[in-house]
Image (tube, rainbow, N blue to C red; front, side, top):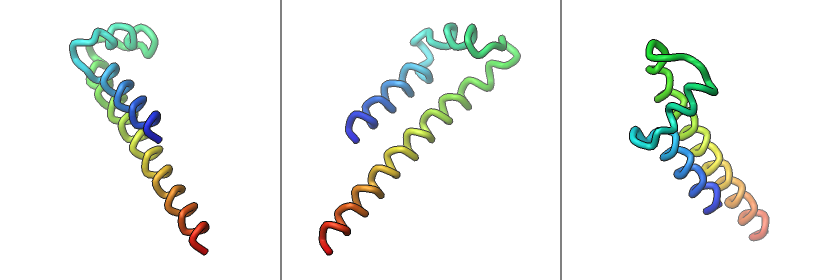
Length: 71
Protein backbone atom coordinates (compact mmCIF):
# COMPACT_ATOMS: atom_id res chain seq x y z
CA UNK A 1 0.00 0.00 0.00
CA UNK A 2 2.91 2.33 0.64
CA UNK A 3 3.99 1.88 -2.96
CA UNK A 4 0.53 2.90 -4.16
CA UNK A 5 0.56 6.03 -2.02
CA UNK A 6 4.05 6.97 -3.19
CA UNK A 7 3.15 6.41 -6.84
CA UNK A 8 -0.05 8.44 -6.44
CA UNK A 9 1.92 11.35 -5.01
CA UNK A 10 4.60 11.12 -7.70
CA UNK A 11 2.12 10.99 -10.59
CA UNK A 12 0.04 13.79 -9.10
CA UNK A 13 3.13 15.96 -8.62
CA UNK A 14 4.37 15.28 -12.14
CA UNK A 15 1.04 16.05 -13.74
CA UNK A 16 -0.16 18.95 -11.61
CA UNK A 17 3.08 20.68 -10.67
CA UNK A 18 2.99 23.90 -12.70
CA UNK A 19 6.74 24.12 -13.28
CA UNK A 20 7.38 20.52 -14.28
CA UNK A 21 6.77 20.99 -17.99
CA UNK A 22 4.66 17.86 -18.21
CA UNK A 23 1.73 19.91 -19.48
CA UNK A 24 3.51 20.36 -22.80
CA UNK A 25 3.88 16.59 -23.12
CA UNK A 26 0.28 15.99 -22.11
CA UNK A 27 -1.08 18.57 -24.50
CA UNK A 28 0.54 16.65 -27.37
CA UNK A 29 -0.94 13.37 -26.20
CA UNK A 30 -4.33 14.57 -24.98
CA UNK A 31 -4.76 17.29 -27.53
CA UNK A 32 -6.15 20.75 -27.19
CA UNK A 33 -4.48 24.07 -26.86
CA UNK A 34 -4.89 27.28 -24.95
CA UNK A 35 -8.66 27.13 -25.23
CA UNK A 36 -8.76 23.68 -23.61
CA UNK A 37 -6.09 24.31 -20.97
CA UNK A 38 -8.75 24.64 -18.26
CA UNK A 39 -9.34 20.88 -18.56
CA UNK A 40 -5.81 19.92 -17.42
CA UNK A 41 -6.43 20.57 -13.68
CA UNK A 42 -9.49 18.34 -13.98
CA UNK A 43 -7.19 15.54 -15.17
CA UNK A 44 -5.01 16.12 -12.11
CA UNK A 45 -8.07 15.92 -9.89
CA UNK A 46 -9.13 12.66 -11.53
CA UNK A 47 -5.66 11.21 -10.87
CA UNK A 48 -5.81 12.32 -7.23
CA UNK A 49 -9.34 10.98 -6.78
CA UNK A 50 -8.43 7.60 -8.29
CA UNK A 51 -5.45 7.37 -5.95
CA UNK A 52 -7.64 8.11 -2.96
CA UNK A 53 -10.08 5.42 -4.08
CA UNK A 54 -7.25 2.89 -4.35
CA UNK A 55 -5.91 3.75 -0.90
CA UNK A 56 -9.36 3.58 0.72
CA UNK A 57 -10.10 0.26 -0.96
CA UNK A 58 -6.81 -1.14 0.30
CA UNK A 59 -7.59 0.02 3.85
CA UNK A 60 -11.04 -1.57 3.72
CA UNK A 61 -9.59 -4.86 2.44
CA UNK A 62 -7.00 -4.91 5.22
CA UNK A 63 -9.74 -4.32 7.80
CA UNK A 64 -11.87 -7.13 6.36
CA UNK A 65 -8.88 -9.49 6.42
CA UNK A 66 -8.12 -8.61 10.04
CA UNK A 67 -11.75 -9.24 11.01
CA UNK A 68 -11.66 -12.64 9.29
CA UNK A 69 -8.46 -13.54 11.13
CA UNK A 70 -10.00 -12.65 14.50
CA UNK A 71 -12.87 -15.12 14.07
